[in-house]
Amino acid sequence: MSEVRVWLVGAGPGDPELLTLKAARLIGEAEVVLYDRLVSPEILAMARPAADLIDVGKRPGGSHTQDVLNELLVLHAQSGRRVVRLKGGDPFVFGRGGEEVEVLARHGIACEVVPGVSSALAGPASVGIPVTHRQVARAVTIVTGHEATDSDPVDWSAVARLGGTLVVLMGVERRGAIVSKLIESGLDADTPAAVVMHATTARQRVWSGRVGELPDADVASPAVMVIGAVATFADDAAALVAAQTLPVDG
Ligand SMILES: C[S@@+](CC[C@H](N)C(=O)[O-])C[C@H]1O[C@@H](n2cnc3c(N)ncnc32)[C@H](O)[C@@H]1O
Image (tube, rainbow, N blue to C red; front, top):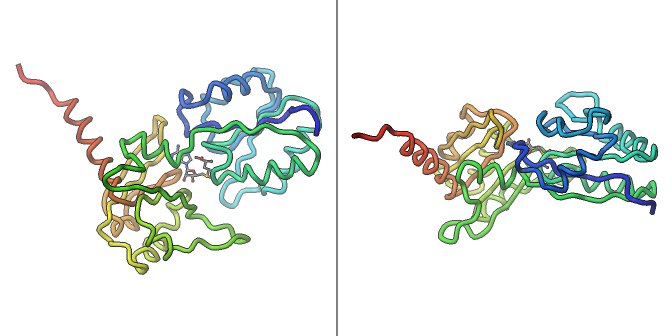
């Protein structure tokens, strides 16, 4: 393996202050930054003006396939310049980071992985939802709502029986089907649910209600869906903020 010239860096959920110090340093030192769609402009602005910033984000129906992206990554890595592959959240949480490390390794290219703050945890936390709580949730399951056609489908009936907190990423578009499968498999339609959209950014918005109401909820991507007793904490946090902003008499 060669000297490290490629860093697979987690950019966190959006707020630049949630970047790790290491990520901020590497972005500032990079000569090439290959970045995903959900990396915020404020974070990209931390790169040097001379750095090449390349948008490799995959969009629904868009032109970049993972194969094209892998080729680009290898090409830039072989150029000898310092390459940062910047991915939203943590590079190894549904970010195909593992596949990119394998591709680089096959080409004999050394790379270092820099963990990031995942939206799976930061999304709920940013609206006051603790994904675990000693009284009501002793486990948390993070699952994708977007099933790749070439991988095993998620066993939603097993997921419905796990208990604890369920965090679903990339699930907004398929929430009707996901909710049907969970309820068919025994999950109570009255289980609390929350959806945190654009978490930790200026566009952050939260919906909260019951699982049975999720299919008709006014929600949009990017979003983290939280299902389980802890989801009511979103209401509590909102109530607390409202109480703190009430005018004080006298
Ligand atoms: C391809 S996955 C990548 C996840 C990322 N690696 C992470 O650790 O957060 C993209 C999904 O993450 C979630 N996501 C990422 N950033 C988000 C944010 N700021 N607010 C809400 N959801 C977010 C959404 O479910 C989105 O569809």
